[in-house]
Amino acid sequence: MRMKLKCYLLALLLMLSGCDFQQEADQQFGDQHFKTAIALIELHKTRFGEYPANLEQIKYIGAWDPMALQSVQYQKQADGYTLEVSRGWIAKPGEFAYPPEFWQGLGIKNRPHTKPTSESY
Image (cartoon, rainbow, N blue to C red; front, side, top):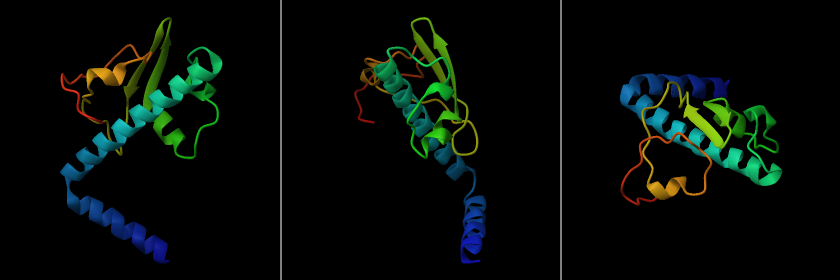
């Protein structure tokens, strides 16, 4: 009963906190989903010598990884892959910005906006 009450209170708090909270949460979750998916895809390539045909082929994932993999759209390409975030926390997040060195050594072919600075992420 206590857990159910806590869930209701959390839901109420989130509804009252407004749109800004949701947008920020969508950005943060979307960023995490994107980075987690990249890490798992690149690890698959390291282990098996090629990128997975689909995300269901990725093995040895953690308990939280399915949430990230269900929140992205993956497409294997001849020379790498494309990856789009389709969901953050609740809705689709806005654009991401990463420094150029973030992309170093990755096989991802589509790259969201890249910041010209070398900020740490």
